[in-house]
Structure formats: structure tokens, C-alpha cells
Image (cartoon, rainbow, N blue to C red; front, side, top):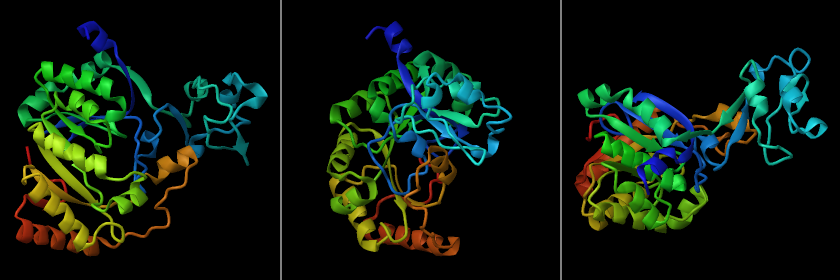
Length: 328
């Protein structure tokens, strides 16, 4: 594809975080893509799951229908508008129900009580933001991290952005669940310097219960990443009562040692933190882990350290508790 066409490709981005330090080496700019084929029970970014644009509502910011009402005034659907109020408060807007998708309500809201989840951006627009921090990347060994949602849902756009970064000498880390076509993975990862992926559970049936999909394709693609010679970090988000059994962690470590030849930079055991509940509320969606009470820090921290020591002693692969230790 011609350079002009690549730079003009459009992707749907939910967030851009500058100066991040945990998802790749050095200081990084992290780009969050919209759309994900998984539905992990503990997902803290529900706004990234659906592939299209969505409207998020923050009722506490709303001035009220009586004092403002601009959102209703600009809605082209009039009385059929999906915008509604209850006891003076703005309610979540379900775009699948009678919504024209024009986003005029969000653009008109003076209080920013209506947010647009998913902004259309070109490669050129993102590169201007990325290049603004090039000096930080050079001094720290940092770069750009493509994250999600799931990067591979927008694989053509991700490949074009990764290629643009590569051609500017900016290292690229791709964080992906790898539940995707192998060819799509290869198209994106050919431009990647680092890859981060999860193994959430080694039992495919349990993996399906926790995420909505089995793990066969994911494990096969992880093998493919190693075959490509990419520098790989594997993570397990350790959630007490779901995947923190020694048997599951042993099975994961055995896969890394025996089927990947231990060819990873790090195996990271990550603590689960109950985050993103407000974003679920903006979408009018129940958080699947809403009733879950995580253990106290002293408990989960002890568990992570015990699992780390077990993996290190029995499997002799590079394993850490958390994501703060350098691995670039």
C-alpha cells in the first residue's frame, strides 16, 4: 500500500496515555484501540470491548434537563431519542436503541456529561502525538505501546501505525490477547520489537468461562510469536478464586518452559485490582465482578510471591510478581 494511503488510514482509539512505564521498557506513549473479541470477567476497560463508537454518560456532571437540555435539542430523532432523564438525572444512552450515531449530543453537552468512547484518528494524527515525545523515548529506551481492547481487531490500522513508528526509529510494543487470525498477527508483529500477551488460564474450558473464548488459538499464536523471534513477555492476571491455583500456574510455567523453550523476557504474575467500575456505569452495564470482594493486599501479595518462588524453583524461567521490574 502506498505511503499516502497508509498515513490516511483511520482507526478507532479510546485513549492515549503519555509517559507510561509499565507496558514496555522506558517511557512510552500508549495507544488504546477499540474492539475486543474477549469478555474477561475482570476487564477494567469495558469501553474498549464493542468495536464501534459508544456514548458514555456521567450523570453527576449533568446540569439537568430543565437547566440545559441541549443534548435533546440537537438529537435528530426528536421524541424517538434514546436520551432520557430520570428524576432529573441523565440516563445511560444505548446506541443500539434508536440512536442515529451522530454523536451530536456529546458534542453539544457543555458539562461533558456525555463522553464519546472511541475517536476516529488517522496514522498521521497519531504520529504527531507520538513524535512529540521522541526525546523521552531516546533517553529512556522507550517507545510506543499499542494496546486495547484488542489491537488485532483493527489489524490493518495497527500494522500501518506500527510500520510508521518503525520507520521513524521508534520501538514498538504490542500488547495483545492473540485471539486472532495468525496472518493478522504476523502483519502487525512484523513491525514490533516487543510483544506482551496473557495466559489467563491453561484449561480451555475454564478460559472460556472466564473470557468467553477458549485458549487454543491464543496458545498457538504465542508459539507463533516465539517462532517469529519476537521479544515476548507473558502475563497472568492472578485473580483469587479464579486462576490462582498452584496447578494452573504450574501448567502455565510448564507451557512456557517446554513448548516455548523458555524463550521469553519475563513471566509476570499480576495482582487483580477492581478498577473501571465507573466506566461500566457510564455504559449502563453491570460489572461482572461487581460482587467480588478481592483479598486484602497482605493476602494477595503473599500469594503472588509464593507462586513466583514456586515457578522459579520448579521451572527456572524468568518470573516476577508485578510489572515494575525492567525487562527491555
